[in-house]
Length: 150
Image (cartoon, rainbow, N blue to C red; front, top):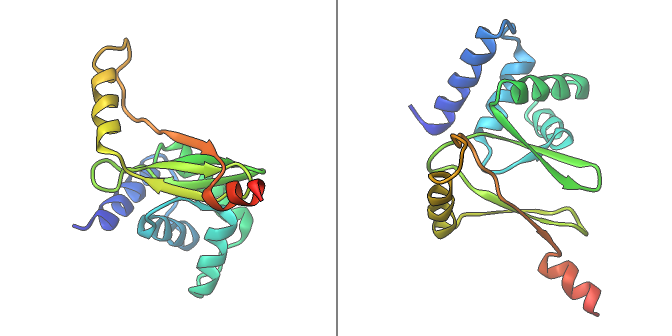
């Protein structure tokens, strides 16, 4: 089973166990999120579904995202300027962190193995069984920093 199929199946099972019905809108949002490599906003999710002729109302997208977040299947990433993005929680190969430009709101994924090793080391010495972690670096992207310097 592929990473996408694995996450989609896990999401379907967990939501069904929580009592949610398996509707077409929910299935479309879950499938789209499963196929993404990085976070999307609710507006971007709605637009992508519409482009694929799977239109889902914005209210349904928000409701489904809330259900997925409560089931600990998606991570909510606040990027500033009132924008929130969501992405599937994945372990292993798909795991990454984010850099967020505070000026334009652009989101940049990054992977750093040294950072991951250090986070594992730290998690062995804290009074908490660490299940997940997320690192978000904030600042100005190269483009916005250059515009500000000009």
